Image (tube, rainbow, N blue to C red; front, side, top):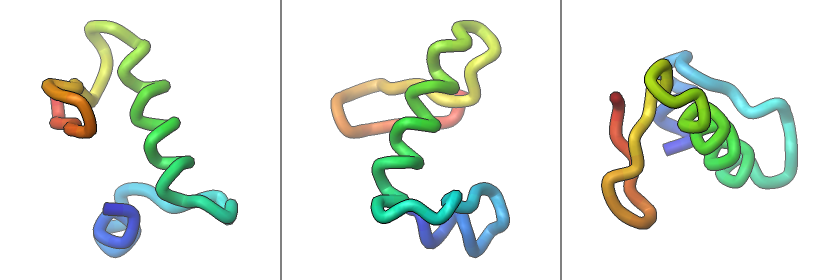
Length: 50
């Protein structure tokens, strides 16, 4: 997912050792926005666009 998002120029890692963990944290942070969130979590380990 990290590679696909970087290739599509949707997101880039800030250069950390674990870009997957950074992306996961960014998605969870976005979900805390409530109605303005761009992501939903329909099941454990699954995300979808809002």
